[in-house]
Structure formats: C-alpha cells, structure tokens
Length: 210
Image (cartoon, rainbow, N blue to C red; front, side, top):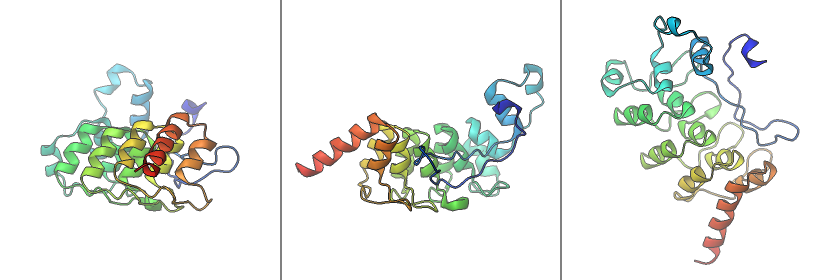
C-alpha cells in the first residue's frame, strides 16, 4: 500500500523500464511527507493550520505570487534535489505558478538531475497549457533526458493528445529515438495510447499532403 510506505524522494531517470512498460515515465516526485499527505487527503484539517510549506512546495500547490517570487534569492532557486520551483509547478500542473515564475525570469530550460527540463515534466503529466507557455517562452522542444526521451515521447506514451498537439506545433523531430530505439510513435503504440497515436498519424499525413 503506497500510503504505508516511508515517505521519500523518488528521483528516477525519465528512462525506460524493463518488461511491458517499456515507455513508462518513472515519475519524479519532488515532494515531502506533508505535501503528499495533503494531496492524498490524509492530513487532518486541524493539522493543516500548522503546515509550513517550502517555497518549492507552494509552487507545486499553485500558491505563489510574483511578489513572493521576487522576494526569493532567484526564481530558479534549487531545492535539496536540485529542482527549481518551475520544475515543481510543471510536475504538479500548476499553470498559475508556472506563469508567475516565467514572468519573473525563471529559466524554462533549466535542467534538474538526469537532464530533466520543466518541459519534460509538464509533457509527461499532460499539462498542455504549461507546455504551451514553456514553448512560447523558448523551451527546447527537442531536448532529451539522460536516456534520450523527448517531451513528445512522454506525451505520446502517456496518451496526452492535447499536449502532443502543442508540441507538434513547434515541429519536433518525430524520427528522434531514445536509447532503446523508440520513437514517440512507437511508444504510443506500445502503450496503447490511441489518442496520441491518432494525433501523430494525422500530423504525419498532413506532412505528406503538404
């Protein structure tokens, strides 16, 4: 049972696992016990009053303002695992935090361990509004993590069609392969990601008929 596990950081490469889940996104979970319990609804209401979240955790909760960001040493201040507030906002799908951070100069291409960019986290979670924001602000659509996975690969494998569309608008390299030789399209097929598979197929057809 996940709830009974000792809380810990689960920082794994955005790599490929063995077996059937070849394209599985090994989730980055930059969280603490408090944040995890709040999300699961396990924390009693009277305890919430005493919870003090870090700046990074508040970014992951969508509870930071531009004024608060400017009060920090840097919008790209690192947590204990070298993640920025923008990484947290992207992982948890907090568009308000992401927008405020970018407005204050957060680096949209800042890399965490294993070459993880904010765009990879947003794409893996299917947070298409954040993906659009990052791309508009200059995020590298073809950036690969330490094992060669791109944002489109994560979006395709996770069956996130809207995210795929946002990424395709920036002409990513569809032929790019990761260390296992997988492309975004092959990952969609392997994961029975029918929606993202259809988006990729329609895009390829549109290229052929141009």
